[in-house]
Image (cartoon, rainbow, N blue to C red; front, side, top):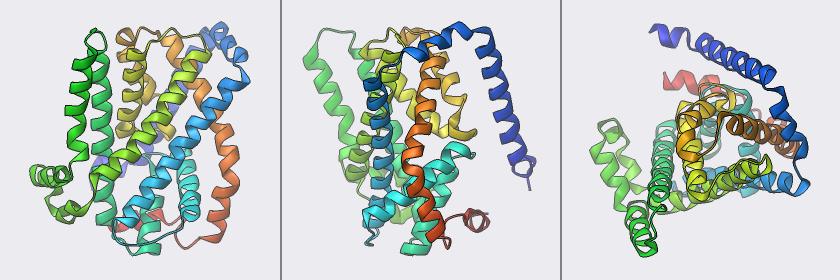
Length: 307
């Protein structure tokens, strides 16, 4: 057993404690900046929560897609319950633990193997990151006045995620995925369209959060901000990727035309309202926890099988 695997939990906790310390230090020394949070309008709050619920709904659609594309059936209401609970785990747990919850669900309830589920998840994230890459490219070309050129570039860049053969190309070119040869059956167009819904929700959350605190960001900056938010999912070693996303955003802050204060305050607002969103979905989440104990809370079994 490697030292990283052996001390994984300790590393995660230390990283989280470090992030909390740095945030507390920053908040103490910039107390006046947080007064901006007291000026948020109710309509802005409504829009942010709507965006967060849209993101959660897209996660349920992704879960449905892996089931449907494996020729299985499940009620959307049940999938929303599982998504609600797994989202709570993602926010309060480490390393996107909610993915494990969903994996156990499709294994125990739908007889879809862990291998197939995680292979599907890889394809989904590759699609999400590619679409995020498109956002960055589009933000670069938005600085030009040639609208026709921008449309052509968008169409060319979108083609791969709408072409069914893309999954086959990905599986054939990435050696790690060759053992997931069965993934070639997955419809990347449907996966990508759901990812677009998630990104629309993210655009709404980030855009309104920044606007509500008075940050001066244009559409180009917002596209970059949103893309980085999606990329940060790959490095979510802390609960809710706290500190990870903010650090990545800080690296690109000059390109987006905003400062560290805007990033920290907007992220704080977004995460505070996420508690309200969770207050809305928590009754649903705990209902599935209490009634579906055979798959909720069984991530240790899944991790043992992965290992």
